Length: 121
Ligand SMILES: [Zn+2]
Image (cartoon, rainbow, N blue to C red; front, side, top):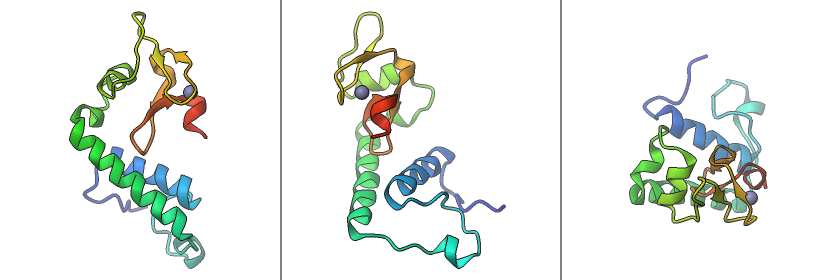
């Protein structure tokens, strides 16, 4: 299948797909040449949230270029975002307040660093 990612980086395309899944309940951003798969009814609220998520992502990348680099760990990203990081490297999730190993912290599409369970909310 020809990918529609085009000139978009793989990581950006992955994040756009995450936003689309969350806000529009679509499986993929690939064109599948079937109207029922390629066209969707979308609420203005979901559009607003998706546009805001993309805007926040771009703004975050401009403020914290290191966030785009997948070689940086969640711990490094958490420090860049000003989150509490314990001496043993545990990162305090800003959503639930629980300290987690950095491998259990994820960057969300809208630029937050939260724990795995909180990322699914
Ligand atoms: Zn959490």
